[in-house]
Image (cartoon, rainbow, N blue to C red; front, side):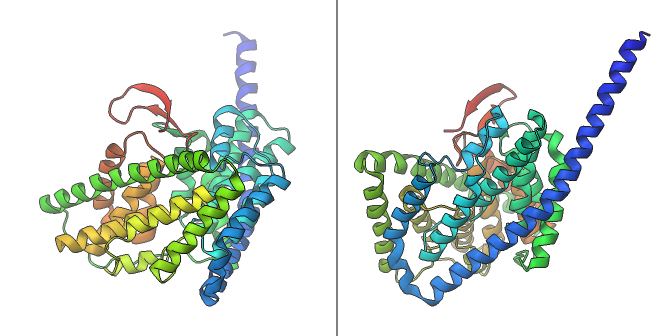
Length: 420
């Protein structure tokens, strides 16, 4: 055998192990840093939410806050904010993610929650984590592949710290970029950063939510039919939600060419809807509402109102993301479905939440893990069936326009197209 070939292979292997060691070290470091940052972010949002609930008049600042957020982005030269999409693009094509994005989304998300915009927080977490990871890769002049890995590592760490689901967080960044494939090369660093970030956030005082859905019924034929019916509808609701967001932004831009007027008018609409509802159930992320759904007490058409509130809030320019609102929508519809059939509304709420999340993100593995971590793995068979059905029925729609469908959902065909 040619000794030069052997030496080349040995050198290549050594370089790869050195690169892996660097990724692991940085993953641990980022887990600590982003775990702390995620903890601070969680506490800031929690305090903003507490203040809004204590001083309900803060919702009257919805219109002016929408305008202020736009001005904030304009002053810092980020008028064409692409949100989480730019993070996904950085992994697909080695684009840089500006570090200032992390500060912008942190402050604007807290502002949005303070006045009651119907937005989440995990979308912001993905942007903060992705921006920090990408910056570290650039700062240390790492290779393109390592920089992409660190971007995913940052996403996993912030998601885990903020939401308290380290298993789901580790897989989400691997799965969300390209539907149909997994970026397994980043598995170990993403897992490590996720677990470390969760431990740090927990130490700071960020809780890991868990919803007790009580007794799990036997997995049998009639139950399977009920779950399939529920999650087929959840897949369709996912399409409606994604289409409403897409068309809402398009029509609002045509109706109001001036983005500041658009923000003020639509922010006022959110305020008017809040006053008409008479409470703030549909303002903010609505994570606590899942408790009511699990208890079987969801409002009959709460999922529709949450879609309307969230679409208007995103179109107005408030920041935070759509993931937690999708939890709200799925849990609310699932509870309604269970109550209408007289069959396990608590379990249906859990299944509906996972199904809608899968439908809007196209991430079935993450959806299964997040159901298990939030509701317990005893109902795993029900969750898996529901997620599989929703994954098929939600088609090629999704929250993130930069997300690629690499392989068809219906056949083992390479299609490489963006979500609708």
